[in-house]
Amino acid sequence: MDFPRGRDKGPFPSLFFAGFVIFRPKDAEKSRPFRDEYFVSLFFVKIRGMKTPIEDLLTKVRRGTLTPKKAMAAMKDYPFQDLGFAKVDHHREIRKGYPEIVYGLGKTDSQIVQIAAAIVQKGSNLLITRVEASTYAAVKEAVPKAAYNALGKIIYLRKRPAPPGRGMIAVLTAGTSDIPVAEEAAVTCRMLGNRVQRFYDVGVAGLHRLLSEYGRLKKARVIIVCAGMEGALPSVVAGLFSVPIVAVPTSVGYGASFKGVAALLAMLNSCPGGVGVVNIDNGFGAAYLASLINRRN
Image (cartoon, rainbow, N blue to C red; front, top):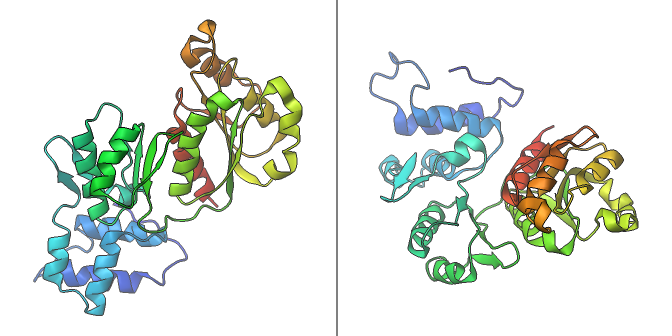
């Protein structure tokens, strides 16, 4: 595997030493370096300037506050933890930059509680989408500090800071009925380390409402636009601003909207450049994409 090479070479010696203490075999001089999976993962982590539970463990080993044996015991469930009905991916934050995010719809309360407990136990941030208040009540018994956004139907808990985005992400809705999808996007964006500003009910039925926010919207680095009905708002916004637009068709509308299909097709056929479209009602997907964009130089 080829490793990326960059200017940030300072952390490499300390990182190599930390991994060397735990994983170095007796014949390390004869073996190829960085053959271990954890070496490879951690190498990428430091290059990206991120902080993960594994890196915390290795730092403690380097400082002498944790023995290698205890560190290995703490990492026994990496890269994933098998719960029988789910394999919780504790390595995802190292590979992707963000920990595993749980899609709650279709899972039982018991399953969600066990998954949430496993994620929090490893020191990762918790984010569970598409859950009802009753599920949150069950999760809160196991994870007392977890919070719930009722509009977005999303459970969240920040255990430690996420890698910060470079700018502000604006979240827009065409109407008030689109707010639940927008809230899923807004909470996800914040949990992924971004500054967020909300601009709700600024659709094309009253374009002056959008134009009144022009000054603030110009400061956004990425704009998420949630709209149902005919799905026209993302095209209007893309024609006004030079930043990437992440369009989210919502299932809001009357019969011929086909539960968001009309808005989806309209957004896919957007005339202005710079519009990316996610699936219907997929506020989470929009936020994840916007976060990746916002972390780029």
